[in-house]
Length: 107
Ligand code: TYC
Image (cartoon, rainbow, N blue to C red; front, top):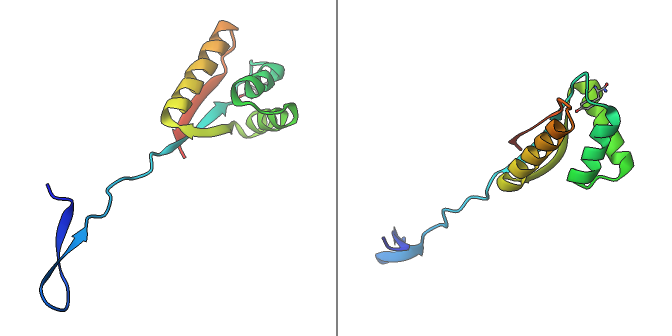
């Protein structure tokens, strides 16, 4: 297929117009933490600092937001990075016998 689409101009016939690029930016994903009644607050704060590079005060804010509202956003990433973070956080929580749930949704 040609990269040029026919285009009739208003003057004297046929001109060629470059086809519009058919590329879209890839979607971004929010990584989300869910509240539960069992995971210790300190453990959640540690996760936010270690896996999401938050300073302690920001990690505390996000943890309390999840604790009070039920969900909170840890960060926004490409699909691959979001999937990896969700996997690592859930594995880490299970390895420490906590039920903390991390998931993702399109931003
Ligand atoms: N609700 C938990 C508690 O009271 C703390 C908690 C916060 C758990 C955030 C999960 O994603 C979470 N110990």
